[in-house]
Picture 1 (cartoon, rainbow, N blue to C red):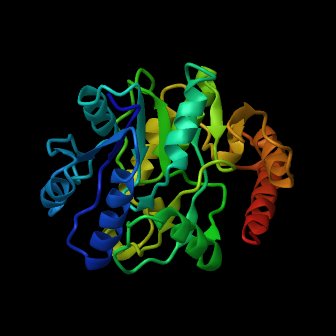
Picture 2: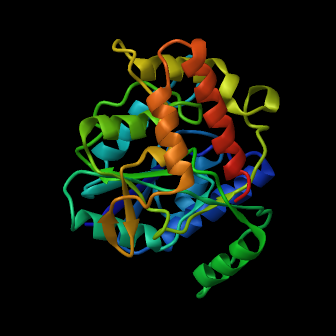
Length: 300
């Protein structure tokens, strides 16, 4: 039985660039020890890719009225078809390295309930990658030469014990809000919410947004607005958590308190000052703090 099941809901394999980077990502996952891989959905080309790389394919997933797969269905399918003690949802453009498995194993040895997330490196990739021996070292070298560390917002992988996140809201995958809610929910439940960036190297292969309506980022799409409404729930206590809101770090294999940084300090004040209504001095101050924080992250 594998330690970790990686599962994902790739985009259609029709766009040549998306096809290339998704194939790269899936190949990187199949290079890892002690994992299995599940692809979820019936998007064009997925069945052929799953067969080629000998990974599990689950085509029947619940969808929004617009046809976007539901996060709740994706997570439930992975849980139902995996015996692994740990699950990991990962976006289909992400190259994973053995760091991911090592981090999962080390965290599991220290605590029973947790969520592991982390920052990615962004890299322009337009060609099929070579996964012959030494590929991890080559990827490290190229990424540190050509790529850049992403800002501490947005999450691309989520590792957790299989019994957690059993009741996900019906979020649309690939739209805003659901990843923030996942961090928020873990913090609300008191699970160690671990930023594994110091120990885990992953790479996002850059792409445009031609696969989305209007070719623009998802933030103002109808399904993103619906995701945010679902995240708020009847208590209306949702806060859009990001990686700076984690309460633990994985550093040298140990779960530790996050190191104090200027960004974390600004974020802490920003969240403490955040008002319920978008008006007044507190709202003005929150906006200024957010602008300062975002300005600092652009320097990385």
